[in-house]
Length: 178
Image (tube, rainbow, N blue to C red):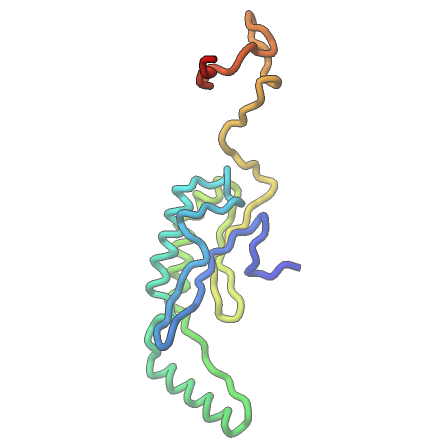
């Protein structure tokens, strides 16, 4: 069984990874706009991928993990801590993703048509307060890539030319003089 956040040959994950040092919090993406995923080769143009990841990178600046906690959040966390002292266990609220999730959905909607043309669907993935953009590739959709070049032995003969072709292809440099 594959975990929901795990990449496969038909799934690409762009995760908003939480991190930090000391009191400073950071959000980074698990993918870079310059590193084109092999699952999308022939399905999505690298420029489309770059724009998609750049838009997701803009969302990292407004991620709820980076926001200063509100007074309501601090009070509910303090109440959970007091209950934990008395009862022995407590419940603590997570970050408020309410206003941020529609922004993420808007980015996915903006790029949905470009990915759908290549047989890929975009959706939001979520497990235990972690969110990511998930790209599912339809294996039945035909990928369209660069033209396939065959070896000279496999090229069909053209009228008036010998088969197999004699000598090196025209694009090769001439051999060095002896």
